[in-house]
Image (cartoon, rainbow, N blue to C red; front, side, top):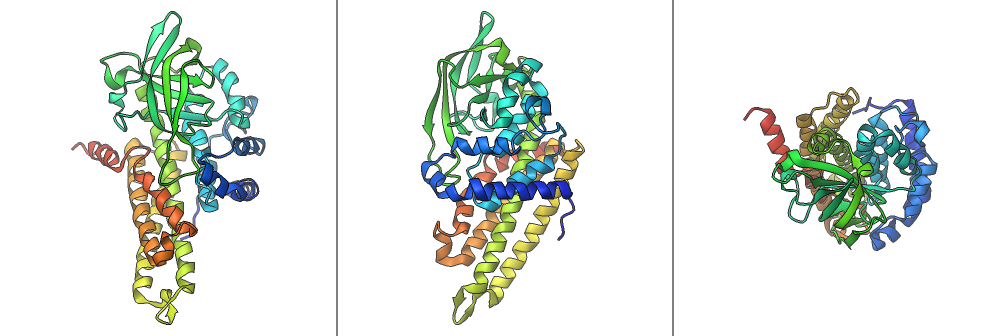
Length: 381
């Protein structure tokens, strides 16, 4: 099914970004898988080539300032196509940037955005805690006033870009007993006394992506680093989670398609009982079903992007896109691996890497169970 989402400028951007990955990322893919972290030099190269902060106004070092999520989608899709799953550009562009653009003061923008766009300042967002996942009301990290500043204490875990991050947006409780209504966003910078990295976490998938624990012990955060209004973080998070979930759905759709493509090629050449396994009816039927699922996911995701471009993608609609696309991703990649047989279990085959990388998709950005709850509530149930 032909896609109609992109225009010529997006196709040109795709070609440039694909070449960038082939030159600067693909040759180092295995190195990053072993080290568990992508070299900061890649970020600097991305900044030089205009792949960070594309919609940040030029006066801050970005592009033309025009919001167009299709460029973000191209980056997600091409990173998946390259097999370099550890690159954290989408978290930087799709998740952190909206907070900085919509909430930062002019002084904060001038202080942070140039480095954000150049790749000199890598960003992260810290919500999840050791005892709190999708339930924001359970956040224990807290900040109390200390004169004109804030004293921040707590711990976060599963933080993407956590090792490399120079600026971390931290969600903390500032009004004890208020639950989600008492949350505030703080921009914590590398080098602040009491801000430490914990373990670099060892994951089954996305092994090149640096994921870390963060510890805040009596970190003095100046008032100038409060992002937005005190006590309003929950509303800000709800506004921005739709784009985060859409970005995850974009990754799911392209992974489904790539997994089917590589499986079709494999079954054309792999023989059993004297003929290619693609000639067996079961193989054809499985791939036919998976292709139908891929088409359904693609239609849903591209339609969701269109709604998002118009500012009409609702929180429940984003939850639907994430729930359906990621659940189908896990299913499709599993069936594709099965058709690879024993070779599918070998990490030298891309389908194996896709399998372990896909499993997190139904968990981060809000679990499938949370997505169902959001959708159910929207039905007035």
